[in-house]
Image 1 (cartoon, rainbow, N blue to C red):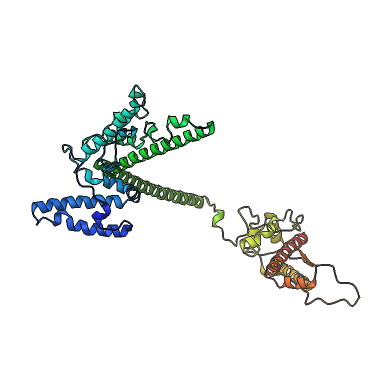
Image 2: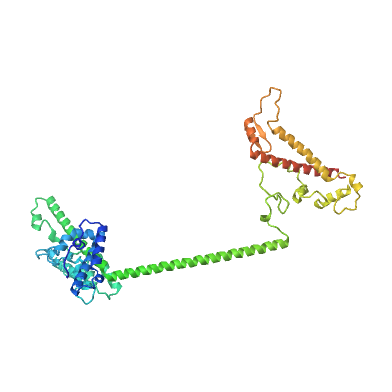
Length: 481
């Protein structure tokens, strides 16, 4: 082991209860002071001293900047500074008990125990810690055989002898197998030297209960000692792995590969996104082209789509009424039989003439002298002798409007007159256009003022007008001989 064991807190000149910010500030100040690039103007001896001090500063900061490693260092600081469990720099106990098989790893949890990472230097990183792990395994093997075992291949941790520390040129598979084996370290020794009560004491126990308690205390002590040994070795493995340049290099390689894979995934995602966008645009263009071709074909064929009709159109291709179905029973259903021609005026928006009527009605109207576009040769005096369809329809419309107005006046509460008789008020008030009943006059008045009632009233009036047109046409048909 090389170098002088010096407390990390003394190296950085900080108290033992210093926080992370104080430790970082002290490290920065000392690192700038002793960095080799800052001392090129000094003599070679001074440069070597500064370089050695710089290594101690770096090792102290690496230990104290890690909370887990700093906690372990604080707990074992005295033993590390003393040079081991017994102050003999790594050797075992005094040989009087089985603890002599335990190689002391405390002095090697200090960065000053090695000098550089050269493969040929006996004080280098790989040579020092390779020897340390070999001695740990040798102690396990010697202790296992001293406990009466014959073949050390029966050891639970015999696989530790199959791996080695290696050097800077070792393959990563061998390095990974080495750390995997030692990170799972478990001692195979019995730790019987930790017993409080020896065999003679147990035999002299007054009763069986006391004897069992003694044996239980011995088992607890052995278990505690074994756990402490495992923790020491595992802490050493973590310490070495953290400072192994091969592990750092592999981690950087893995990180670069992950970044490359992530970048590749993002690039593939962007490409897929662009492909989907292009495909969507092509599909939309194809759909618009097909729709335009279909519309052109429909126009050439003389057809029209329902979607192209205005919202005010009330009829579809077959002449049927388009729109929402109205609630309530439909009146006059039987009267509309064989009168499909009655709504042609509203559909065309023109006055009634022979071109918009069925052939039988057109012939009949020509016989009675109603003028048309194809009957220009009819004399005017002959036409004046007969009543036209338009005048008859307008007269019927006027009659139905008066009837609707009377109906409305009767429904309106404000214009209704009270009977002189002492009859009771009706049990309900009914609005015929809305098909609703009300329990009180006040409810009916409020309903009559509502927007919905006014809309229904307008529809009701339109319905009456249409009925008037139909009745006028029927009256004309009856008058035709």
